Length: 263
Picture 1 (spheres, one colour):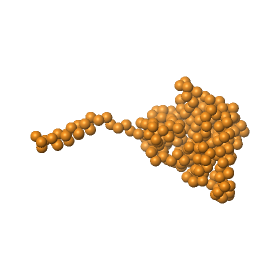
Picture 2 (cartoon, rainbow, N blue to C red):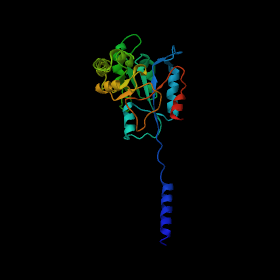
Picture 3 (cartoon, rainbow, N blue to C red):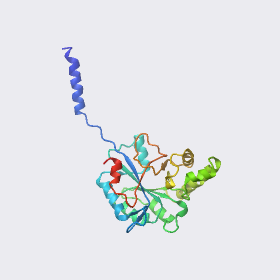
Picture 4 (cartoon, rainbow, N blue to C red):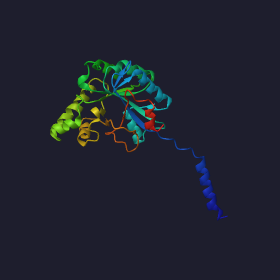
């Protein structure tokens, strides 16, 4: 009998493992980068037709991709929030007026969140958003009483940051430049929204991973930097100051999002 006990214990453990609920699968996060939307055929590579944009939103819905924001991404990485399916963060660069007239109605219709990165020196000019529109968007509440739209900085003057570093030299001069470009733009946006800007999008994706730019972002109160490096994110080793993205251009098929997510 004593000889049988070890075998019985092994059998019980094996049966227990078979009956155990399978661990839920974890998903990945992709950050989508849009620029301007167009009603008809796009005029350049960085425009996306409103019809194609709606097709992207439908694709996200049909493929069970949850749309989240940067704060939720941080909770996923820390383990505070569990991700059982793939997720996406929708972002728009520059602050073109088409975000208000074309993107916003569809985002509301499909109940999706988005972050708008503003090129602050252009706000109120030509085809860009006005500060009044920024305020209206920032105060919008959905039927659950939540605000699905947030704002980030695309710097004040949208320059190549590493080119400015080369011209000014690393040190006090470049730090002062960053404090104006990053800090000044953040303060300007903060003055028009209920909360505070926490995310920065690098113009042209220039300067990803640069320690002086990261230090400048941290010094001016940013928690996230979105780059133009292409990849998914959301793992425990995520670097919030070097977040990758996928540019969605005129000729980008909606299912390319699935290719990155392994669907």
